[in-house]
Length: 278
Image (cartoon, rainbow, N blue to C red; front, side, top):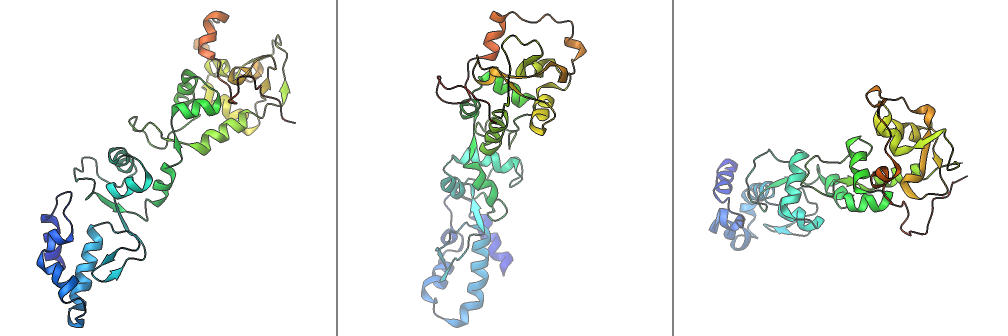
């Protein structure tokens, strides 16, 4: 009996097709004409289970006389409306997370998934941020942001580049807070220090290795009071393991280097400088 009902559901595959379309008069009879007839309870339970396995119903909805107490199924359309993003964008995210097979062409309203299994993903999506917000938080330029991503210092939650806001806000804030813990004031002309960003370009392990060292406390982080933002952060030259491929490369002039450093600030006010924390 259940197999026959499933076949009827498969035949009603249109975006707007619901139980009434799939089961026709049979649904109306069980839902209205024989709603109070106990002899049909068993069959009604079978149809209700079939309906809940194929269509997303929210808490409070009524299905064949029974009120839904907890959601078990979402569709791309219903979840997108709940989260507040577009169907296509959510489809890309859920496909990469394993909710759907690549190439699944079902319409958003019929493309269903386990709402319990992917509950955390739907919650996290609302807190993901993109390049513009990240640059504002870190006080970084777009080029610096790209380097942080390339080096793995900032890792997106999904790889699909069409998903612009795909970094966890908490990860960005943690990186910012860690880098703001500069505890050493460094004189502008001190030759024992090098810009954090420059060090990342020279080090054989790249910017990620240097930042990891800062975060785990094995690499000291200094601050140039005369400068602001990302370019004010420096690390000891002694911690940089020079990549021999770059060992003989002449350093750029100040004029050539300035655009790559930018004038981004960690803090929103252009008059605000980063102060050491003791």
